[in-house]
Length: 245
Image (cartoon, helix red, strand yellow):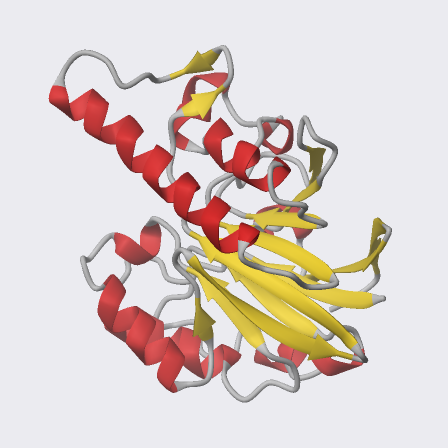
């Protein structure tokens, strides 16, 4: 059994130092790894990212992250990535990492993802260049996720995104904004590659649990949804949430 802690959408600003740290320092008692599902900052500034780095550095478990749309807002995503990695936080964007956990291997592939919508109610690469570019960008990111997941040959495989791969975890959000919350191509990549658990954020008014058409468990770990410093999921055949920080 591998215990996966996860949290997204913490939106830390410069006034948030120490807000999560007390609970995070106990993460090793509950989990084997901590996943961050993007939107770590409020406005994507390097100063905000310094707060994120201080909160999540030097924890008793490995920390693996993707960035979210807020983290891109100030066009400093490369600097934010470098800063977090300097503090020992692995940032994924179309790549993966493999960990050893009690004799098992855990593979995590991650990408921010993008919007576009879901089967039957989605954007298509037709018409104006802006619309074609929007959809092509989403498809390209989903293809990168598929490739990184397919390259993993581990006992447990997890997909980490910011945008949602299914509409099921968006229930509670206005349907009109579903195309801006996720894309079905992410779900297709997950279903095609033998994933055990998919984790995302971004949907503050959605719901925690869902499943892909292929039967992969999906968890929305946006902090307004899980209402804690992190949620912990035990992966061993089924995916079970256990009490945590």
